[in-house]
Image 1 (tube, rainbow, N blue to C red):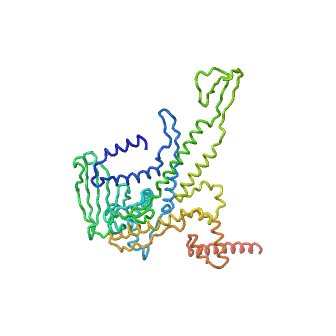
Image 2 (cartoon, helix red, strand yellow):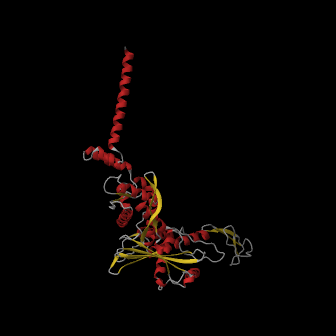
Image 3 (tube, rainbow, N blue to C red):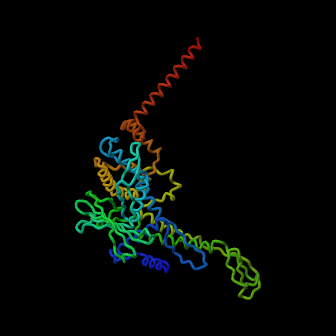
Length: 465
């Protein structure tokens, strides 16, 4: 940590309101933990080379952490998620739930929430009753609003005898008071049998560091208005594991360090350096790429000479080490880099693709299991608020999130059909087509072709008479 980093931290400490609930800085360290991973995902990474005043900045940031998190998010929710409730798809609860999610921009909400979970280790969605207007069966309707909460501002307290049972959620953040001054806000959502109590507090300079109660509200449901889930399972804590651990950040720093040094070497030494001996008087040292460095012969000779100095290495060892660091980051985050396979993509079979993505898919499946529990719980709570049958049914994930060689799939289906182990209807369903509708169309086309053939034959026969 440099001097400027230390100064920024000091300013942050001065600007923060005294928080009697965080005397030992536990919450602040958690915020810093999440913010550091967020910064690294966005490419705001520590510069590895010191830059003197007036000196060129050779720092390079090659953001593999951002690539790792983005790929993890895309695999999990990039192709969307559907819900299958019991009974008819046109049932009132099914139609209402679809409309509620649509009003809350389902795909965007899930993408943002999952991305937060990747950075922090936990994802949170808050239910605000009657907070969203959307369309239901062609008419405007009021739905619960689903809010993607920033894990940076949220902490949980659990039953001392059961860490999986959350009894209190605390949301704390800084905002602005009505008069424009700085103010800290806190909302505490705590279990108060049989429901929950929601308390809002504020803290500013006028309260001298004390939290002042603004309002209280009873949440008369057995569940909280917040649904949380772990990004990756943690066996002994309610807080899950983030995609990026401290060792990955260290690898990213070393990766950037090597890239920056290679960039600096190239800037100084990639061009040939022209020099001259006994071709002029060296008034001053000239090291620019478009300048000639002049020397005088130390041996007393007067023979003039001009030549070029060039690098004796192509930095192969440095580039190899750079590649090793990059591969370590990708391997430790179960990330696949398809850029290294561009020349082989046409040769990869579906089996080879599955092997290539094996670790990434295994990681995705674990995340699916955790997110699925949360989504079913969230759907259950939404249906309870709507006073509808509250069975959340099942979460329907895409059958495959991997690229597929369609020719290989078609050949396999053709072979199965020829062996008599599958029906045309099954293959039609696998291809995403309506078998009965396609059969009807095929019959109509055959009838039309027969009619055209009959007309041609009759015309020909009349011409022979």
